[in-house]
Length: 612
Image (cartoon, rainbow, N blue to C red; front, top):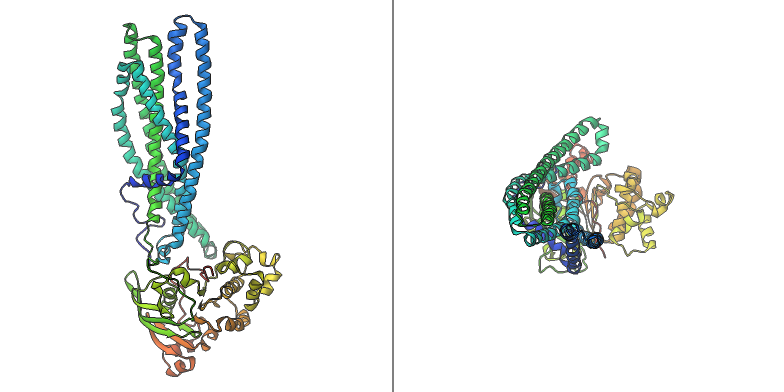
């Protein structure tokens, strides 16, 4: 219902024009390392100077050693040449180490910024974008940037220094030959412009199709049980092959453009060398220059086009980095729909009075709640019932401020929830969702998730209160048992009990049970019902009802239909009216009018308490 315009893995804006500011934003991450960058530049200067000293030593060896039959001069030049090789190797080694350190430190900061941004984004963002595409941003696209920052920038600086030194040496040795060599630069510039325009589009398409692969892969792994249940393995494999083939074809097209450019540069280099041989040879014959100068110039021409070739490769790499950077900064610039206002204050300890005052909320222009008003007094138990899609889960999402109401106001103890910080609000809320989500790690770590400072005794007491202690103790490592990804080692009912213990340990003033016992069998439900009574005692509790036992004891029952509250009252009172609630009751819970499940909100899994 809330999905935006996109393909499986593409973020909106894939076709956006090339943005040169991406480079500046990436290089901004290098700013804190100015001293190391300065040291790297010094090493580049030394290494580059040593690298291009060879042609000059070649000239001296021919003109001063061979031409004059001076063996001592030749020996000295040979020793100096070996020394320049050692200096070049040492400078390159230390420069690459420093550059790699700078690059990885910058990427550490970039990844941290991306992760922090994801944690600040509202739930609606995750309903619009596939998880696989998001993962592609943080992994694959960051890896592309990693290669650019750690090696591409190093290559750029080195090649620029070498190119400058070579040009200077050319003009020092022979101005005419230098001008002959430089006549080929306009041809190379035209070729670079032609190929780079095509490369930019190709690499942007590669980044997009890679996002498709990640999204398809993540969805297929998450739904592997359903896939196998319906025998859809071949169909899903065919879909993945199509997505993977599109990525391969995009990569091949990008590679073809790059591979086509390299022979063009080699041809231009060969033509320049031929011109130098012809012109330089005539100068030597005419006595206007020496043989050593010509040989040195030929060596310089070969080296002159090497950094240019590297720079063109760098430019192609830059295109791929631009495409990855566009995706990353698109995510970084995503508006935070739910954010604290500059004047937001800390929500003080609450008693738990909740007011909805003419609240209206819509998904993509379609009203889900219309003029909803009710008041829950401190310690009161409120049950929300109604058909699927009636607005029950949306109501608790607004209470937890996972979304903001389009109209009306939600207040807790008289405080409009938009006027307080999200952290201080959710610190006093406890949510036990229908989808019992556990993080990788031990049972103990999952229980203390909402209250990291809890003692071991408090953790065990919380587990005992909800009836989880006994089965935990029967496990091989007790509370230190690794639940594996998404709690795969435990049964659905056991995961639900861990979520109950987590919510109880957080000691919230407002407790939300979003069909929290729907995954627990009747026997287990009876065992934890008494514990839930104790958990809800003294707390304002909101229960999205799935079973009748959680409804009958409610102080207030709100009956939702088509985004409105159509009935309200106690259980006996509503039965006597013989309206919608009576119908739900007589057809059974869930019965034909099955209670709603959460709207597509994969990230709203567990938010029992953030700190204490």
